[in-house]
Length: 193
Image (cartoon, one colour):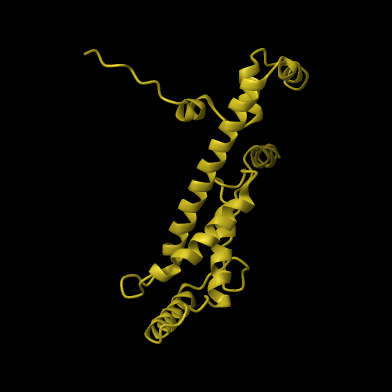
């Protein structure tokens, strides 16, 4: 009896970890790399043919567009990007970058379009995060500069545990002291001549 009881209490404290589900071909987020590569090869051939007759580039196929969407949505749900309030903008930027640079994919050099476009999407996310941080810094500095005391009262009401209004503002605009230092204009020292 005591061994059953200790086993139950152990399961409550340390519940067994369920194995992570693998994505299957039927999954909504699954990108079949072989089919993706085949579609990219067909599209690249269409581009070459259009260039030969001096015509406009053809648009990407529906499947390629769906792959961009699936990769971007899935990557945006990962822990490093999931909690940003501007996730939709990140995904939009990523898809735009994929469409802009899809013609640079070379099937002769790489047989893995999934990794190629995942990298494009990853760096598009980082650029969007950087843009948003800079915008938050601008809002922070503008609010700090134009504060006539009402902001301090607002901070006391909404962030009553914060005595420093600057700290409350930085928390409100989701920027850290490191971000503030990064965007502060650098003061240059004069050279002695």
